[in-house]
Image (cartoon, rainbow, N blue to C red; front, top):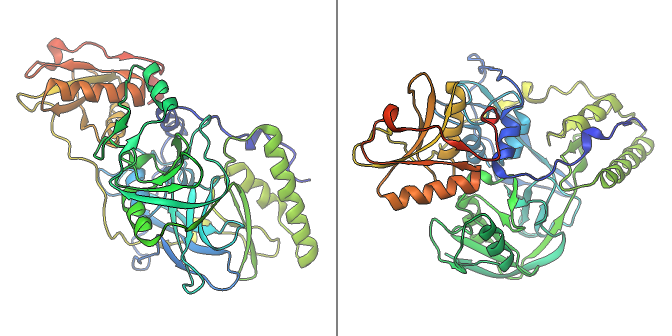
Length: 452
């Protein structure tokens, strides 16, 4: 056994969405790596649809792009069909919310298909990725990043099927969810109609697992994370495409495979993800099974495995496939990847200056450093629905101001959303109040300012 320590592989506890953001933000100082100007022309690369042949088990390729002004990693991830975890783990030295313009961004768009029949929908919980195989007559696979259930609300595994489809669905709130929100002071209606406040988005596919759906979302930048009550969330544009291509009766298989291996062009690859909601003992069993599998491949193929490369992949758990045979040239990873052409650019709701006359606003927090304020403002702008926010300067500090809002009621609703999603208590600012004269320090609940 070449892996003798398991502390690297313990599944991270599910925590509130905001604290997940914070843990990634605090990974270290940003390293800026501008893309070389003399490289080959930028190319279009597949994002969702890939051709497959025979027993092919690996699709896609690694690529790079660059940060445009006022962009974030979640925006880039959405454009290229990646989830939040996928893009942040592939770019550990880039601040996801305020990356430097022109910084290089790694795009992990190479995937090993789950070990499951290539029929209908196959969801790999560990990868937070859905694969759709339209049928034998069509030699292709479509793949999408997804959000899955958080701890205590785990997405179930097993075989099922699509039992119904609904456009513009209303949401009948489960009793357990009503109670959960009530404890936080958020009284939900028993039925949420279609619209921007409906977490199901515009399309829903009901599964045979009672109470579980594949659906869109009004919080698209949570796709690729463990944030739902067990349902499977897709970006709005992805769920629309999936909704139009699938039919009632389409088989669905949900697996949980964090350690994937595949042959490609006579090279053996390992794709290792962070196990989801796994105890230490369960993770040890998965690792033992992986070692047994790799030793069997080594014995049957007569080709030695580079166990140091395996160790490093299992320590990173970043979901980036790596070649692991000893006689394979050193893996160059993203340094040898192509430069991906941008074809569209998602953006968050335009932000108006907080000095807009006659509008209600919110003081969300104050910081000593401008980067902290800019980061929180970016997070707020990525909410669903977005909360227009700006970082401003006032009396040698950097407040984060949300708004403008058309009414006091709209401002209060945004404050409620901030309290639910960020555990921050925002203060109302009346129209035309002066920032320096009337703003008080925002109250912080459950987090430290240094977490931003």
